[in-house]
View 1: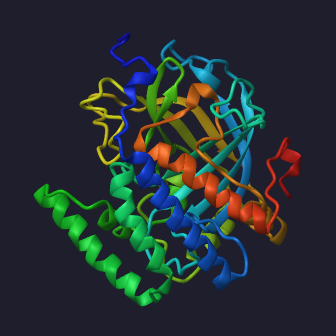
View 2: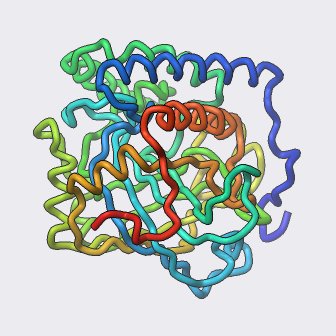
Length: 359
């Protein structure tokens, strides 16, 4: 322990004995949904975050005045990196934006040098996958029950999912007022459905942060996006994409990337992703700024590249930012399996330069 923060060492991860078998069962279910989704859409869509809402290029600017405990991994040296950002909805299906479920921000940082977490990752890129909910399912076993629902979700009509969302939002409000525990599935279906550009996004699970352990967030900081926070955006089937395209036709957006460091395994646990880390114990601390200039956020070339040719994975990362905990170990196998299926249908590419991202 130094500076009040837990030091990283491999022993802080403690997996349950049956986790490999649980993950195998989940991956098999994902394989079935891959096949059924391909039959429905005649293309290999992602099994999570299938629907894109904006495809952006920008910069990640690492701050030059970070204290030692934040100057870790790729954040050790102040500099700017080109980035590709894909905004999305969490469904492994393409649905109406009237259905309010979690939204995502996937960030691909290009040209990041250093030893990688996986030996077969030959890229010079670092991916960060963030969602507009702080917490997630507790572990792989908890996620298994949800995956069984996700497998048959595509058979449900939109109006059923909208009705479930209405009930879930009521349950979430009641739970917040009464401090009852809120099921993660209800929490997801109870998403507010607000403008995606005004949302704050979170890594949900933990990752190594050089000598330490952290969760990450990206929060709006420019007035242009702060004014969109909490503003509803679900009036039609493609409201999110329309709002993103309209915004970036005239405006720049800035978000701040922040790290919340682990203090101890009780209050800021690694193996249970359902527990929010208390900000009074460990506040989010700024490490970098994301700058997204005005641009065409959607056109056929960008959409095809980002949706069909590009992949994101939390395990495409430096060893200094290796994902940690049960949910992250599950993601290692789940993302690999889903990407392999997509690769079998449409070649997936990993960019070496921002120039490969279409204008």
